[in-house]
Length: 391
Image (cartoon, rainbow, N blue to C red; front, side, top):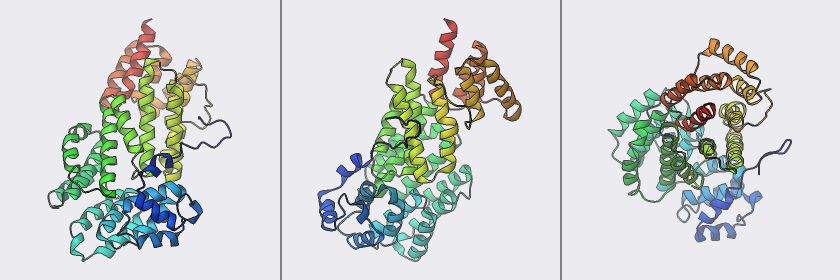
């Protein structure tokens, strides 16, 4: 159900997806400790107690249980668990958990703790890279790509090579090198199949699917194929809130891109994905991303569907877009001309200007610009606008 004025939006509970993934043996342990469907019982003391059973319960099963029964405290409880484990498989999963959930202090403590242990000789430089350049944002994408490539040539363990390759692909996506992402899927799948089941493997699968989904949506404009991969990430219990944000954002855009086919129900589906992305962005503490979703990305979707929305507090580009929806084209052009002088004209601003002026030549230019900027999901929307002007 969509958010209404004054009503706090809550997405469909993930425990409907995650809880069935909890194994019978894990359930028995949780029931014995009164942790099964008992959110208040999930304390730091309880999670430390579970850490004593790490030979019986996998790291991933603990993540699934915490996500099911204490979803608001996943990071708090898993931080304690990650620092409490001693089994080697759990310790390796703990490194990946801290990197994936961007828990810098936990990752730093784990790296210090594992110094000098020959088992972690190859793991330490890899996760030091995550700490320095991904969690603490010390480097630009190209520097991270270079460092990841250097380490790929050094480490021998397949799982570390794959993890570094995926890091490289993530950074390639950020700077528009999507061909590299699209070319990687077959190779990555064959490598991942050989890895033992673990939290690390589940994480790798989610990252791989998300990278491919983004490439399909933004570079190739294939929303149906992208949608399937985004959905696969959302049902993976290892996927953190921070990764669910771009997934639901992507699902919203994929639904929007398909709206040119006139399927009625898609508007509500699209809006629900954006509201779900906002929910997880808030819960994950992604302040900047959340602000973009609320002020720019979600208003954009509502404008595309012709919704009348308040222009106060939204991005100026989308305020101009809303004035076009209202057929107040002079107001829209005033804002567009102002923005052009301040920051130049990207594909979106060109599209809005073309709509305001009902200018087919400018729409064709916008079409080419969207393609050049790897915003291929927009192409059907621009073509629909062109078709409208040709009537």
